[in-house]
Image (tube, rainbow, N blue to C red; front, side):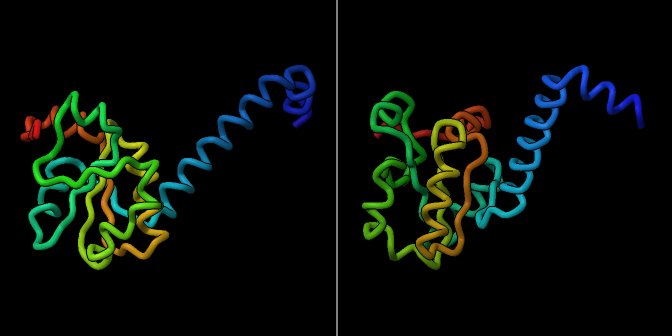
Length: 142
């Protein structure tokens, strides 16, 4: 035990970095365990999208949509405007909603907004449109 205390007093920076890394791991795992939406890969998300009345929600910026296209039939609402435009998708509160962005983090934020506003079947497309394209699934340029 004495050696641990000696190491700690001789290397406070290393101990501080260890604490930061452990804190980051704990925060990430806690966030993952307590999220109120599903995270599915492209093939699993297709199954959800094929359900009657499902909404596919593209939360990328307009320039990104123009550049890469979007999933056919997706409704485009940038994540920054989602909270103000929830009335446009209010009829989907009890239906599946699959949100996606370019790679996943923005759509996770969109999923949190949807869940906080009463949407009950929210799914985040893991890896976003990048994973969708990598799985050779179709995109629409319209």
